[in-house]
Image (cartoon, rainbow, N blue to C red; front, side, top):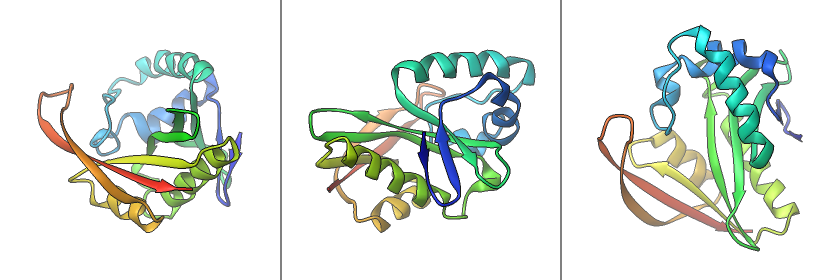
Length: 168
């Protein structure tokens, strides 16, 4: 479990499927810059949560919970890429929870966590058209070092993925 001023990042629990569906998974705007697909039918959400739980057993990824409500409002994670190199593995908040400083809290928390495990460099990604993510990343002292053209598996469109890093 990881903690910020307003949030708790913890492993998923099956009972959180409804909050994740309501707050995140059903919203196209939440998935817009991500690699996952919207869950349109609430009947599909419990199975999605089961897959999330299995994924989290072997990955350093978390559901994001609001301390105020205890409700699941997003997800985030990190991945070790080398002995001293870590990267973010996605940060997503439901549309009702953006613009509150939560993304900043999450990214800083992930950086601090990686640093506590020996990270000396941390890498983040943002799609070129995702101005909010780019602003968040650079506000925490990251600098862009590369870009890569990618294809969105959901619809075949192309996009530019920007890569940022920071020495810790």
